[in-house]
Image 1 (cartoon, rainbow, N blue to C red):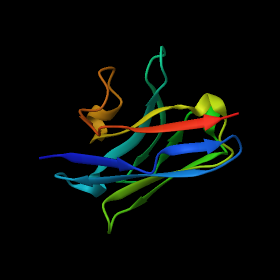
Image 2: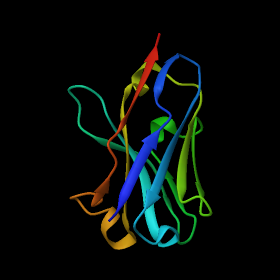
Image 3: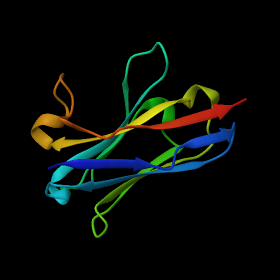
Length: 123
């Protein structure tokens, strides 16, 4: 059974930092794409960043490039999202998601999701 468990969310002031963690199990970690999505109230879910564990390729949404860093620890089956210089517009529920390279980028999105963790950035 695939499981993705997020942690690390919280309340932080603008300009601060948070590190999200996604502990994964139930699939071959180093062959999957694992990423972070977020959804703010009244807005559509958007992909923030992802990493292809099979070749290390990384993707970042333009608005977070240079502020967020995604990394993967294959020994711990955990993906991290280091978020620096946070802005109020980064406030959202952040979800970890995973799937094979073939499926992750389909219109339907990844097939496996965590429960989400709230990130709130105050101004």
